[in-house]
Image 1: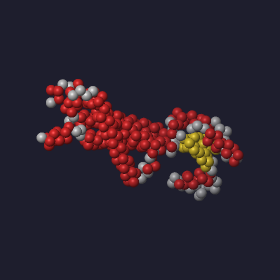
Image 2: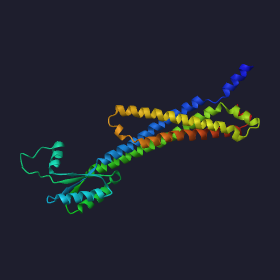
Image 3: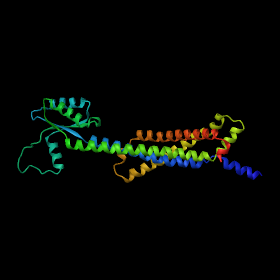
Image 4: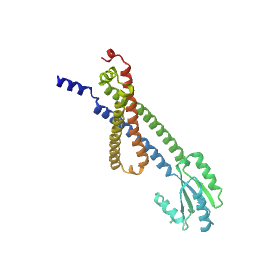
Length: 290
């Protein structure tokens, strides 16, 4: 008789392991999607930061005026960084791009001095770059201004399309993940429906019945979120070792927010699903539990 009671008690205990495992697996999926979204945004910013606006200078510009012009450009809100490139440096860049030297045909360097302006990512749009071009052209010692217009159009369109696709996939998978976690918790609570109903029948209040299960749901969700965060972080470290240059895209602040979000999502969905299941079985008649 004692063995029968022990077996009955053991069967009535919630299946915490399966609920934690189910939450963890789904949160890992969410974590990977979140990491891909972060990297997509960082990669887009990386390409945008490679865009330069080149301001070519007049030949009669003296050092004092060039310093004043550089200071003016650095003070503008669109400037991320700037570099003064003299004729000799411009020639080195020209030859490094695979162009043929003109030394056989002329003795003087035809390339002008220039200022290469790195643009902040928020300004790497066609309208903003046109505004920057007009601003630089108005400066007395600037003879010409250009930037890769065709590249901007293609890059902006591709980044926008890729971002929209990744965002749509992320939203869809997030909804699927939430449904899967909810079903996992509800299945785990299904085995405890008689325990919940028995406590109600002996006079336990709704709060008394739900409180320990809600607390356990919070703990299980937090555990699942922590395990998922550790697993995703290890996957990121492995990917960074395999893919060259991936480490340069890492943003520890955004990763910390991602991992905190995984833990919070695990806790909230586990708590909500558990509470809903408890209320469901409390409202059901005893015969309906079979």
